[in-house]
Image (cartoon, rainbow, N blue to C red):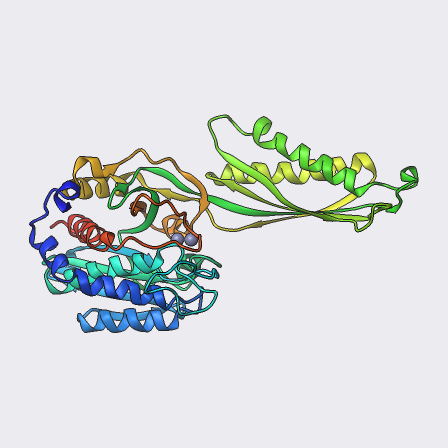
Length: 399
Ligand SMILES: [Zn+2]
Ligand SMILES: [Zn+2]
């Protein structure tokens, strides 16, 4: 089975990970059973920190529930430095299904596989601390709050790369929809940036039977919704990608009253900051222009969220080279298309070169997507993902 996936199923690295596999599966299942919401990862952080310390890896806290592991070996002063990141938080979802390690915390669930990300990186940390030989520095970044308020941004703002400088930083996410263990990696955009779109239309409401005495905010809002759809199709180059969706319209309460306010709420997804800025300008101009034409007014608020996650060419090539030495050719691909979903690792890649890649998570041919109430990380990936982390780190550091 492993020889189908890995070129070196009998290496000392794989043997080490195999010897500890049962323990790490239990650890992953323990984390799965005890999920914590964003910025509340206190027990998870304690667990990570105590394990790192037990392997003689120095630790520090950053951004309250973030844990940094610092491992230096050999002539580290003249060696390179690499950052490896795993996210640690869970989601506000009530877990369904009958897993023996089902969530014990009501309404909280590891439905994005961050329990697995944490465990893969811990497995790699144990090997790198106890067995590996290198000259350099490895910074293990256990990042909180990926799902809610961009813990990656907060760590960067709290001095991640000043306190723990690295030459490159890497992140892995599990990926339902690809065979377990398959690595999906490529240059360029991986995940989109986000921007919340709020448009409040104000007008003179009145009796629905006498619309000529009013300015109809429902009609104006409807024109804005339709008009907004011309931005992506008419103002953005066909080569660029962006999505603009209005997901909520609120206004009015009766069949015979024209309301004096309608609110629109939507999301913008993009891969290029210049494209984002152009779309934001167009949203504002178009909404205000339509309101002006009808005698209404509006307030437009465009709130930037996550920035795009874009891989750096050189650091992606280094990872492809490293991982190609580990994976059988069928188990590494550069074909994955970018997703319009979002991920806060973009904030780290904005400050530091690096790459973000995926590991297939499919299990028993049953497809459940991320953020669904029966999602479960595939424990076979602990060994493969751990081996991928170790291989990448040692290759990067020149071993
Ligand atoms: Zn998620
Ligand atoms: Zn996730």
